Length: 131
Image (tube, rainbow, N blue to C red; front, side, top):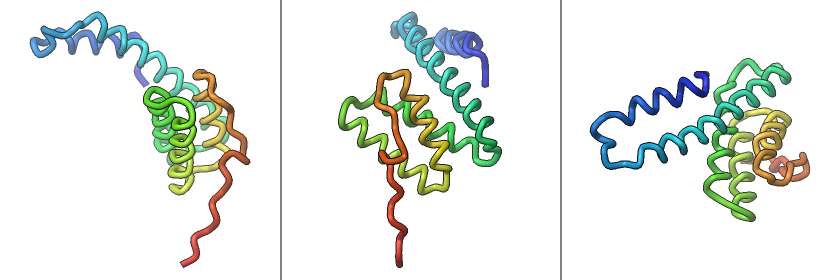
């Protein structure tokens, strides 16, 4: 994980090319700066939760889940957001991620966005598929 300031400087260097001459660069840097701050917080949070739960294998998938939750909060609101979060949770659960860790990540990531906390009852396990 690169430090926040380093990410911003790299982005500013990228914007100096002629391709971006007609774009509002200051606004772009500000938006990227806010995004980077959020992502750094999420990365630190995920690392802390994974360390606490002794998760060594498949860490990248837990990061992907957290990034997906963040993306959903930027795209949807209210009931649609809740439905999309459930879909995301079930998808990652079906991929074999630990239920307890997913719920903890969900609660912590969404905590900063004033969304309701999840309980195990909020996301019941689906019945097993019988072929």
